[in-house]
Amino acid sequence: MTDMHLDGNALGALFIDLFGQEMTDQNGCCDACGAVNPFGRAVVYRDAPGDVMRCPDCGAVLIVAVRTETRLRVSIQSLRWIEVLE
Ligand SMILES: [Zn+2]
Image (cartoon, rainbow, N blue to C red; front, side, top):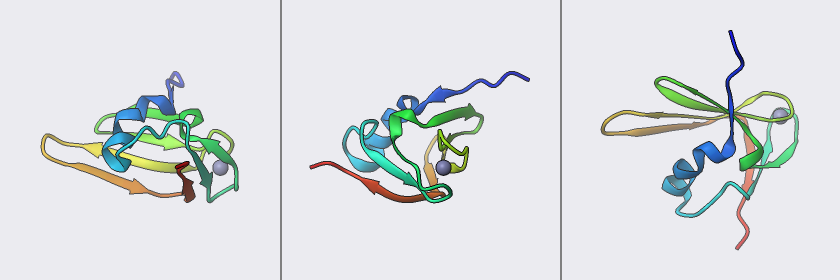
């Protein structure tokens, strides 16, 4: 099995849906290891039926997003905080 993953930019549209602005250059802190990284640096696995975003440093699951025809369900898991520059 090949390790097929994307970077956090793959979820740019999701972040705009959630936060109303571009977030790939904003920082988040992994609750598992304490690493601070911009969302664009995260590791994304695009598997049906959803996307899984993992910490680029420790691999902890940060966000799971599942889209259906009528809904978007987002589980924010191992994120200690999200920082948005104003
Ligand atoms: Zn981590």
